[in-house]
Every structure is written in C-alpha cells, then in structure tokens.
Image 1 (cartoon, rainbow, N blue to C red):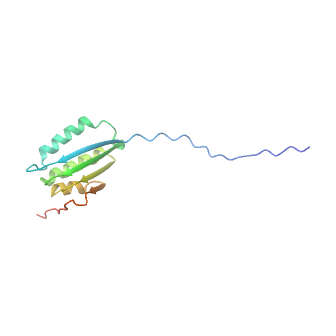
Image 2: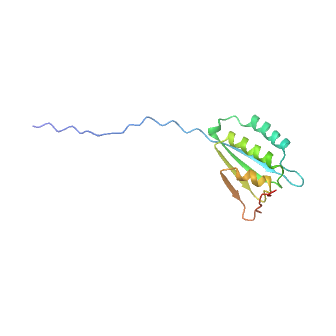
Image 3: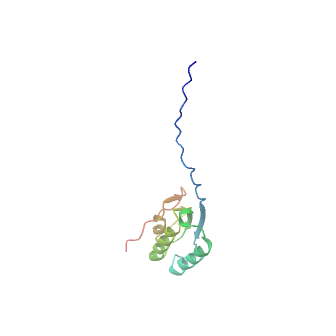
Length: 127
C-alpha cells in the first residue's frame, strides 16, 4: 500500500502588528465677538495653555480649531498656526459663521476646513 503524499501548505506568517497608538483629539475654541481680535498676547496665552494640556506625542494628536473671529494681527495668526502644526499630525478648522482677515489666514494653514453653508467667506486684505 502506497503512502499518501504529505500535504504542504505555504503560509505567510507576518509578525503581529503593533497596535496603532490611540489618537488624542484636542479642541481649540477661538470665538471672539465684539472688539476682540487675534493678537500676540492672546497667542502667548493659548500657547501656555496648550503646553499644560497637550501631554501626548505629536504623532498621536489631532487638533480641531473652532473659529469665529473678526481677525486681527496676521503675524500673530501665522505664529499660532506654526505652533499648532508642531503639536499635531492632523489639524482641522471648523468655521460656523465667519473668519475674517487674520482668522482666514489661520484657517488656511490647516489640513481640512469645515464651514457652515451660511458661513460668510472673507478675503485677506492686500495692504
């Protein structure tokens, strides 16, 4: 009686994948009404608070910025967006109503922008 041939199965064994790090989602709410504007002092205060609150590595962080602002100092907005980009892997802006002038510049520095259908769109001044 003949021996049956052994069955050979090729199995690709990959090492177990490391679990994906949990995503830490932070919200920065920048609702300014009336005469409040983006300025350097405000940016310094936000940076100080972010230093205290964000404790996870950059690769795990996502930040949503909720913006409703009449604008302000474009240089301060630029400094803020640079700082935020250094703190997270993904940056989104949510604009429920308006983001004028420097706030528009701030919104343009993110990865994704979400706007309400009735949101007022503004341009940057050319001066």
